[in-house]
Length: 253
Image 1 (cartoon, rainbow, N blue to C red):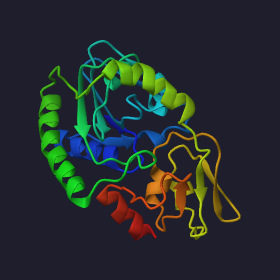
Image 2 (cartoon, rainbow, N blue to C red):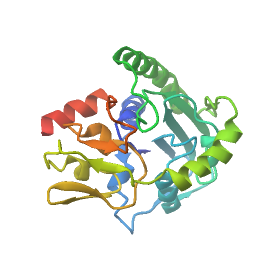
Image 3 (cartoon, rainbow, N blue to C red):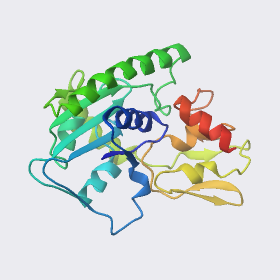
Image 4 (cartoon, rainbow, N blue to C red):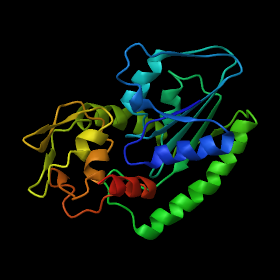
């Protein structure tokens, strides 16, 4: 079993790649969030994988909350892969409080947090995906061999980032107050459809955010007419969506 959380497609792609390489199946956590009775017991000898993006040098709070529904028996093989634009601080240490990790890996992927950073160049995006493809081969081999591995790029000052900056990020920036739709909005409703937390409702054909945002960037990056902005911090910036997600989105529309 491999479960993933993804906004713009990086973690979804990584989970799908791992599933293909390990003969497993990948499941979207968001498909299970509304099922209040859903729970899982991971038994001895079973493998449990989790793939998710790093938010402010920490796991997304929605992922940590979701893990409360899972019971892990002694002897289960549990691993996690976190996707990140740069480094991940003590993300896996934080995760280990909810998930008894046997192995942990970080995976460098294109940057999507455009409220703070710029989207990377097409060449850099291609280079990162190519490198990630090779790295996933090594991760898959470790998983198939049930290896105990901690192969994580924590970066500089990981404790400062995860123990000081991350709580501030969650307290003051993990919200949707600055999101808005411009006059370019055509009312297609894709943002409401793809929001993993169902935090967007349409009011007279325009998106309205409901206060339960995890800053996954799905709405702003996947809007087909670039009609969503975040204050004045995203004006004129390119958006990032993993290539396969963009192709599927365009085929839907």
